[in-house]
Length: 405
Image 1 (cartoon, rainbow, N blue to C red):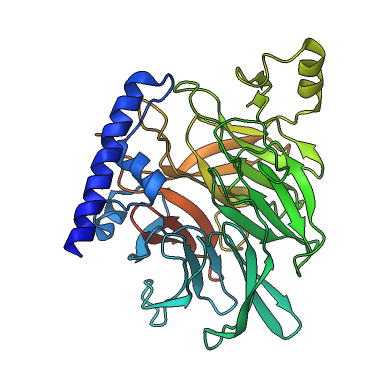
Image 2 (cartoon, rainbow, N blue to C red):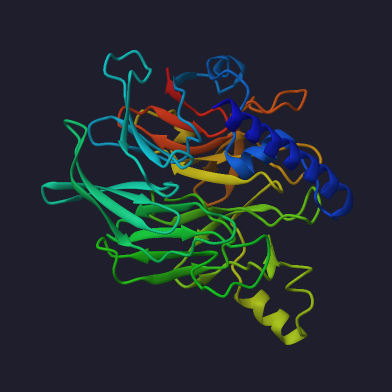
């Protein structure tokens, strides 16, 4: 154990030394925080005690934030169950945990490793098929499912991998899934690189499948790394976050919120943000190719600040909401690494007016302290059956619970 710890410390020190050297010689390699970058690369957690974090966070008036649970290494995507529990994926440990507040205290007193031995599980969703309730899990290279009896929180039968050939090399290892109202399973796969022309058309794209894993369709392309997506409850429009590329300075390109349409092309790697040709893969094209790309690429409906890294998003649909949150999505900004000054590290509320215009306000802030220390990195948002809002934090290995009083 001591020997393994010494090796880990040595590896981390060598990584820091390498990064220091790289920042002096690689143009565009601004680093907001070395601990955050190491967390991005390795999943290493925050040195901050999770129990102290809620007192340092700020929410709008009327909303109360508490710690729901900690000790969930690399806590990522969540899903509320039909019985009121909460599922969370832990890619670092290869586990999906089931959390429950059985005594009504507002904190999870049950923490059950429901399924283990997975390949970096990330996205989760539930499908009811007759009398069977299936839990679907997106691993880096596959999507599988297992039957669950939620009343006893127990699995039934074996875990079945339905989609087994997802690309699993290069960067952007997360896979996110969610069933649409059309009954199809939607899945996003990020790019293999910062910026490049992919050989696998499923990279930097959104696909969809039938519930048995058949019928693969490429639904939308040019999405560099769309980790979170959801449907607006008022018109069923599909929206997805997208992370802009790195190495082009502190303030460019913006990260994106896109309205996803079947067959849509969203620009990457040729176009960044709102119609800006990429200096590596767009500006060197012949004039007619540039014109064609600009004519066919769909621009974002909203831009986040560069390198904020928007991940999970969720439209609020519970009836117990104040009027200002009736047409609202919460988005987790994981926070920058490729930036001189750190930015992001919060949850924002995006509000749609009747004309479809989007405005933003901070919903949970304080993960980035005034001295630029980072104490947490929000990842995903999930609305519980009772109206609770859950926020996962892979840096602190924690989940927070927000209630409206």
